[in-house]
Image 1 (cartoon, rainbow, N blue to C red):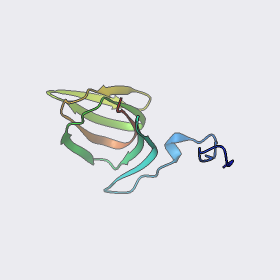
Image 2 (image 1 turned 30 degrees about the horizontal axis):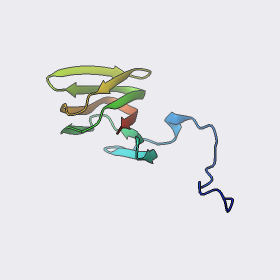
Image 3 (image 1 turned 60 degrees about the vertical axis):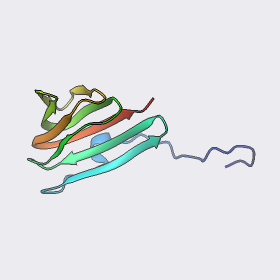
Image 4 (image 1 turned 120 degrees about the vertical axis):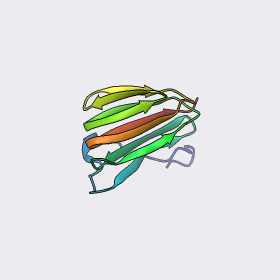
Length: 112
C-alpha cells in the first residue's frame, strides 16, 4: 500500500467459481467471496437433501445455480433451479432452499 493510498492491495486473479468450494457429505459448506456495505457474495455447496430452513431477509438476493439442482420455495410457490439458472429472492418474503441433488449456488445479496 502506497503511503498516500489507503486502499489495501487485493490479488486479482481468474478463478473457476464452482471449484472454490467442495461438497461435504451430510453438510452445507459456505464461503464468503465478497463482503462490503453494499452487499455480499457467498458461495454454498449443499449435500443432497440438505437445505436452509424458511427465513426472510431485508434485502433482495440473487441465486445463481452453479451445479446440481435445488427446490427453492418463495412464500407459497416452489421453483426448481438447475445448473446455469438463476432466481431472485425478493426482500421480506419467506424463502427456503432444499438440495434435490448435490447443489452449488452463488448467493448475491444487495443491501442498497
